Image 1 (cartoon, rainbow, N blue to C red):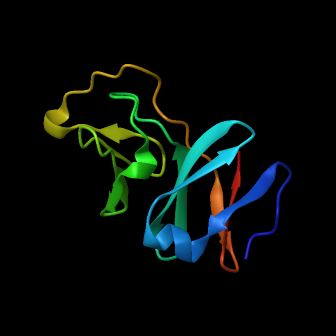
Image 2 (image 1 turned 90 degrees about the vertical axis):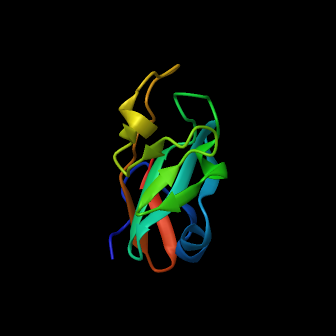
Length: 110
């Protein structure tokens, strides 16, 4: 169990992140939290750079979050994969954040 680090905060419960992607606001920044595996959370900015959609409105498939607009997928590192490999982004790629589980809480350094 990792201890709290400077600048870290609780984002949501592990059980909530297992159920569905969670949108969390941190100091005016929207992030999305989901579980890559049962004990491994992912936290990235909650905005698709392609169509400007909320990634938190998407779903998780094979540990990657799927954008509900054009089906781009994002890994825990924020890297995108586009259907057909065509990567035309309208904005910057989402930033990823260090995250971990402590008890039933997802923590991250935002």
